[in-house]
Amino acid sequence: MTAELEQIGKQAQAAAFKLGQLATTAKNQVLQAMAQALRTEQTAILTANQQDLLAADNLPQKFIDRLRLTSERIEQMAQGMEQVATLPDPVGTVERGWVNHAGLRIVQQHVPLGVVGIIYEARPNVTVDAAALCFKSGNAVILRGGKEALQTNLKLGAVMRQVLADFKQPVNAIQVISDPSHETAKRLMQLTKYLDVLIPRGSSRLIQAVVKQATVPVIETGAGNCHVYVDESADFAMAENIILNAKCQRPSVCNSMEKLLVHEKIAAAFLPELANKLRTAGVELRGDEKVQQLLGSTIVPATAADWDTEYNDLILAIKIVPSLTAAISHINQHGTKHSETIVTQNYENSEHFLTAVDAAAVYVNASTRFTDGFEYGFGAEIGISTQKLHARGPMGLPELTTTKYLVRGNGQIRK
Image (cartoon, rainbow, N blue to C red; front, side, top):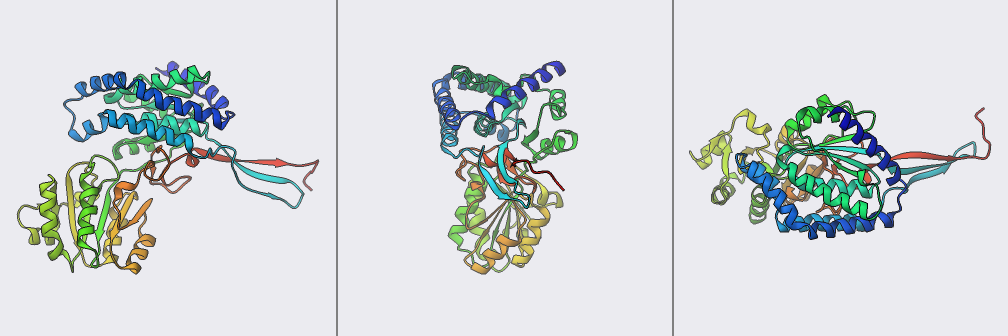
């Protein structure tokens, strides 16, 4: 596979050179056509997805949920691609400009990163989201998905590449690796001659493996050990709605809530009814000693490991805290810097929470499930970055560019 991977890298570099000079109108036409092609080829895409699902019937339900495509999910992917087409093109935009002491006219302008590699697990929507965002931002993309989604990813790639061919654009702007082995993934992580940046999407285990093994620069997307803190002034009905949505709507994804913190002054009044609703929704409840005393033997004792665990499942750990300060301290110690929420009617507490919590997205009175490129108006996302360099939070088009300085003179030399 080494020679084949080298060839894929060369092809991507050649495609990236052409994409960097492609007009916005041309890119938008291709994206709109790709969206329509997803709809037209829906039956074939679902057939490929069914092959993957049949082969993955022994996987946990949370993986099956990520892997499964439906007509509705394909339509969402198509709509996301169409939304990307309507967004401003970041390529060529000027960050700033000035004239220096020597009379040089200096402009800092956005340009594509070049060749982007994506390593991800059994989430076929990433194939389309990443391809759309990379294409619009002028980048070629090499996609290495998990083996569980191989047939689906290959079909999605083929559909998009056919559109590129129809529009006489470089088909190698989008390439899906057909060998999902760990050895090939490791070689991709070290394809420094051709890859400009590598972005992992998936479990904490996958992300850390990429961070540790890659020699290509990595933009780290993060696991989501997300918290909801219910303050002493919270509206109970609002808090219940937010918690049930954040935990139960789609527990397998990284922006779902994994931990609930409740102020001790309201715990006895708030938690019993909430616990009944969560149990009715099928959620397993774990708790600290105070929660166990309050809610009884149905609560699974929380271990030290629970506070650092991303479940991606219908499991929730609950902790009673004495203050806002204690809640913030717990979040900053155990969170993954992804998404955190406070439910409160106290303005000062909400502003302090926004300022003091160290995370990519911090909410007041809203579900963590909103941390998503589509929900933020980006059309899609390349991932949710939890690091602090270059990009943080849902990564859209601007985060897939870098800058270069264009300097115009009329014969100046440095003295």
